[in-house]
Length: 336
Image (cartoon, rainbow, N blue to C red):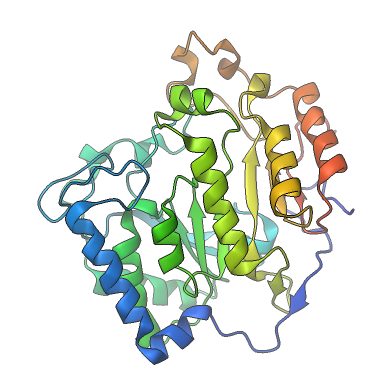
């Protein structure tokens, strides 16, 4: 099992089918009219919102639920992003669209200014036409994909926008970059729309998830969501000639201090319940952000992940994971 251990910007040799002429999955749905029907079905869910497992059941057309978001796109920023994993960023960048607000309240969120400051984005809504122009602009910048970051609460407008962008010539694969607190009903409506699923598997314990991210039942919800993603796209990758990912599943696991994420258990679950071939992106980048320093119940969150803590998860990967596409973010001490 080959691993990239030393250079976070370098891509080790991946395995996967290389597509001679790639067509995004949503093209066929757009041609048949099914993409329009999916957009309408998702928009109908806004009337009694259960887009995520919080199930606020508010009418998003008139009021705002836990995500503090209405019905129009709310975008914090967009760009050609080179900080994703190498198969996503490639040489020209991932076309990231950072959606404002979130359905989680992670105490250590590194993007809390985007995800947990809804008051800063009131009145900043844009139109679906404008967002379609953003997607097409990212395509003209030679980005390798359209990367929806934190899309869960804005799925209806994203799919509506995709119907517009596809008609105007968008041909890039769509990345669903999620915290995995997702509704199975919504994910099933995304089948055939999303090419690349990029889910976080944040926790293996519901009590920790409740304390650190403010949601109930995270473990079962996230595991069911990732299982559905796996059903849709499988564990094998479809890659472009330059090695960038065009279709597949890539599960992110952020190692937290004091094993709070249960990362080793998540690695085991993926292998035993889905497949040892599921590619994992193991992340060592945790640093205390947002409210992490103030959590007296979890003092370990005030420090970085130790080499020993990271090594424990590396051992779990060596035991359970067999994917040649698994990516290991180097630890600042282990990589010296």
